[in-house]
Image (cartoon, rainbow, N blue to C red):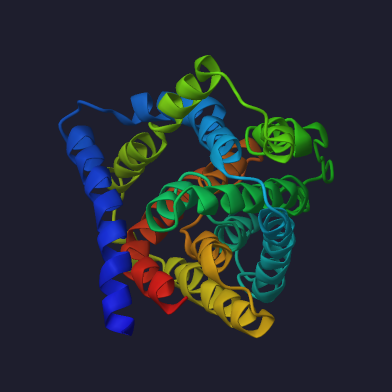
Length: 309
């Protein structure tokens, strides 16, 4: 049964990675360059992903179970990031701060938006996207507080947290817009739902094409040059999701919520690792290398973690 589950989950992952392979080919042939991908990332981040989150709130039927699941997903997401920060705290401290902060950030924060949403959508469906949006809220809260602290704690000017970004960001705002619609369940006109649904439909293909450009530019020899990157991959892709699976089994959480939480915990390192490293003058080159390599390794680990849950 486990092997059957691996094959089922692996098929969904492979479908997404075939899209990524198209991105690799497009990048190698200069049809879809890294500069173009960066511009498309803004489109994905500020327009398409919020539309995908909105769509899940527009289409999911209201029930007490779904409300409970949403609150559980936020709580579990916060606990997941707190646990990840705790278990990685003793590690990577002997490096230069510009590098150690990158290793820690990459080990704690997963790509639950760009990678998590397409995967959850493929494996679980709209209900999973609904719960994943709650995990994204916890990601945003943690990354703009603990993540900023991690990146700036050694700076002479001290820690500078932008509290506006805790709420005014593309991961949280669509939840605030969609939640009243979900709770009140009004009959929305087609002129609203159809554009949102059409834009949301671009989420998985575009996310995977952009992901492919990251893989295309990766020097995979770096896996053997820097032994710390595989260590980060172990924390992010194996230790954290296995801990999440154990916690889920002990707590009795099951179904779409359980699968969503494990997928969110098993996703490779977040693209924010690169953006935060660049913004706070850390080693952005190392961040890009780590995210690309760990994302590539996740091809092997994601189907196993999904099958386990």
